Image (cartoon, rainbow over all chains, first blue to last red; front, top):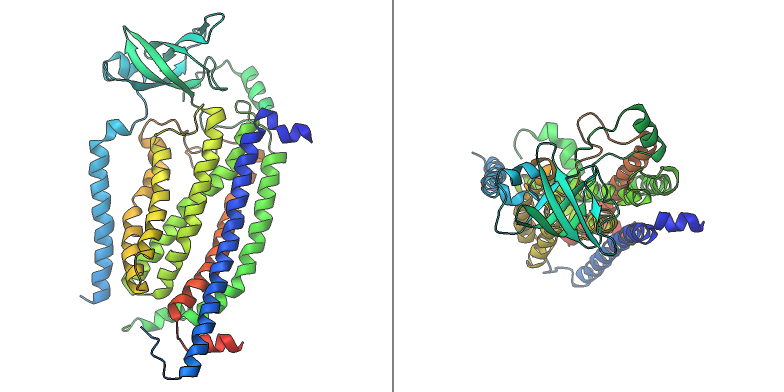
Length: 60
Length: 146
Length: 250
């Protein structure tokens, strides 16, 4: 195991590269879901407001 | 011409124009876009004599000399047509060895290229160690031209 | 739309926001699950199963992060620019939405390419960074993505943001072949292409398969991320459309 982690002395470089790749992949998943949820939330709020005012002037 | 067709031509125009402009710019700066000069260019005086530049080639087999007790090394760089002597003081990258393609940054001083940085270049081929060993056994070492 | 409506019905149906919103939502797991499986397989293959290189030893294993990320950074830009062109010519909002959705994904994987490359360059070449044609053009790709996003955010009006940024995306396309051929056209520190080269890949099969599987996995990951992001972009663009009410009810 230790032998595997050391990667012939190149461990720090290799694990940093794989680690950074993993962090960016996870950030991508989080931020995509976050954007989608936020957009949905905002669309819901807009719809709720539009209903209460009926003839809304919210369109641009 | 429909508006859509007009927009299509506009898009094609942008692509063509930018492509052409880039082509011209690349042609004009072609020399500056190359990362290094090879030993033949240095030998024929195409490399700048008064400024620092990069030279790339293969470390000639049997040319590497280390000064004991210091980090000073000297070797010659070859592109199999011309050879340039190089001297360097400092740490060398892991891949540095005779027969390896390297790139040195420095300037010419009296026919010797005095380097302040040496980088190792490797080619695009990857081979497991056992295969590389058996390949060497099967054929005499050919020039590893990078 | 003229007389070509008949042949393009499927296209316009797919390009209609509510239809696409539903389809994209359904496609996400079909992209995400293969992405996860392929990326895990590629990582295991690259770190455990592939033999070390005779010259670079274990350090060459960084290729399994660097190359798939580089592939994604270029593929994503081509998708973004194509979508921007379609959006400009045919005035399709959904195409602009796809272009906008692609930029942050492409930018982040361009960064992975540069960082992993740097971590590979230090032990092998002897430097973290150098201004050779390949490295510089890939850095320009990052700036193109960032510039595209900055330009978008400078407009309050989405339609104008879509059009202005689409032009920038088109202008930047010229950089893509430059990145790919930089190592052929000019002397560079960076080596030539291993996979896409004359005479086939310069790698034995046990080193090559994790690389190809990784590139495929990253492509699926892009597709999954793009689906999620495009749904968000569609919601932002549709504002008060009636189909949002149906969505609310569902």
